[in-house]
Image (cartoon, rainbow, N blue to C red; front, side):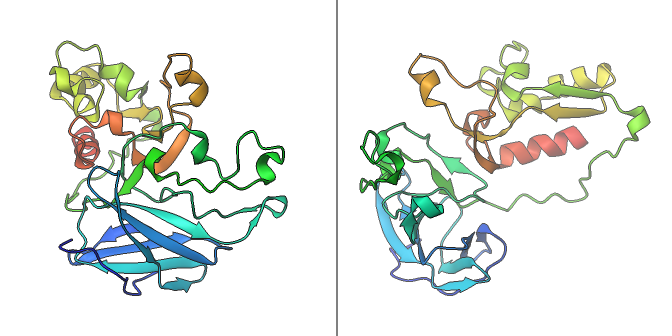
Length: 264
């Protein structure tokens, strides 16, 4: 993106999330009750907000806009304007940066602070209060994904159930201590797709591997306060984005390549 834009084109309501078409990026996000949604663009570090642009159109409760010349790798988030009526289930607070629910890649970690909450923690009015602190500095950012990897003729093996032997595994736990793997691949999708690991599974007669949560997840506050970490990954942050710690290269294609190799 050569210069900071001052507006968005109308774009399309589908698909949801951020979609690069080679000439720019379409952004689409659903909200049944928002009055306005803003797209926030960030620099590569995720620390500086470069622009805040209103999604110009809403079609069937999907707000959307198109950013010409935007490229994969662009960091972004949303701010939603609307009623703040907790007693009626509405908690719109534009001071809080929102992660795209359809993000396919994220950058950075959620850093726990009371500024993340839409209400003032400790207020006598509890969660009926309203917090005006900007949460962007503590929030991970969505990343516009690169859709350049071509799946070609890749297909799931489709082994009959009666012939299936399923191996349940945790990406990190299954590969972290395997000394046969390069150190930088251990605990990652690259390690899972290493020929050594695949050969091991084939020798066992495995026909399918079932992975424990691989989507991006939160490090729970109470665990961090005890010096612990969330190992299993059931505190979901982004259903459609892989856990960044499992990407040894930091690139989304690492997971895609792993899937393709396991199918081969």
